[in-house]
Length: 555
Image (cartoon, rainbow, N blue to C red):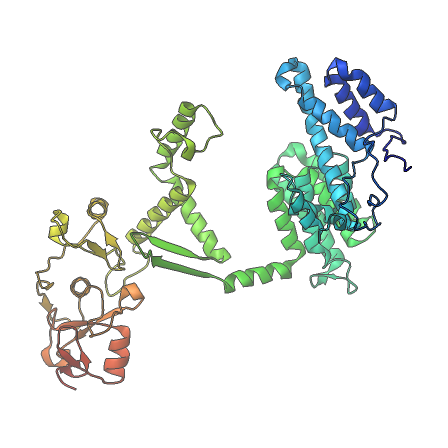
């Protein structure tokens, strides 16, 4: 008869197991204490079932086709830890004396870090020995996903794999001197840099390797730390010791990867946690300047911005990618405009009042009661800051003139619409936006404006003078009169399509010596420059008139 499957404790206990046992004894009810002691010290067998030899239970041995694989229990140390955690969970922290509850919390925080490291090491083992195949999974990542354990994902698998290549980081994690978040960031840095290190040509990204290593691992790290210290004289001794430590690391010998890893571990311990991501990014760009330039060139090549009217309803939709310079300028403008936004204090007040009324700092404004006044979202605040910045830009006149007129918002609106006459057409901007009465009134309240009156046939009161070109006001009048669209029949070009409109004399100025609105036609650049003057073609207008290169109705 086959012997039952047994798992017994046959080795000295680790410090972690001892701690687990202490937790188990402290919080398990007294009536279970005898059984626990027997289990912990008496070699109590776990899982006395008697599986058939048909079933596979040893890594590397293929299962037979006789039936499903049995569930193999974990090792004894893991079982002890599981039972200890269950015992801890059975005792609510609120039932403990204050000092003991606080001590428990501290112990659990330490254990959480230890369990994370143990899990990473276990994942690394699953990956290196391909243990995932025992559960018929194609990869470690697929196996982890199949476990459906909350909080464990692909990023943990990535870190577990990388830890094999970063022994100093792994050592810091194992000793509890570094968080897994920091370990993830350092291992990612080294993974990106590794292919450029320890090359046969003695270069790092095309530059002398030792000079580059010293510049990054000593000067670069010292600069980053000094920036955080902010010139504090009290830290001068620590700073000198830091430089000496880093110089020793760089000159200690070994591979470039090993020395860089050691320097980064020192940096991680000296860097503020919140500033570590940006600090590592700076150091990586310093280490790989050619790669940095490639990314900048790619950002420049991929730059683009689109702004289109929404297909249904009001509003605009914008999307795109900005290069470094444009993005920085936009961010600077938004920051400056936000600082002067009159609504920002109201947002602060709304936050304070909302949190006080709700009584829960963890709730987001969208989860507050409907009657509670909410602050603007960050996205809305940034949108409003952009509005303030654009208003200031248009008011400044810094963009020069276009058609002898400063850039401005043009709105065409009928009196019937302003007075709320049923069926009246809405207001329309030069770029095709349809505005409500409330929007028009708001614009009138906060803008300087020019009022143009048209008759029922959209004719503007005539203005004439002896200058050859139309004045800025006349160009504005003509643009309103033609609806901001080229007057050639069948042409829809205008500012809304990115085409400039040009005024053209119906009768040649050389013949009449005067410029009038009735004698001026607004044509797009294509029709004016290429069709009329370039090719000498006669154009038919939307009102039925014919215009040639030499005047009305002549070819």
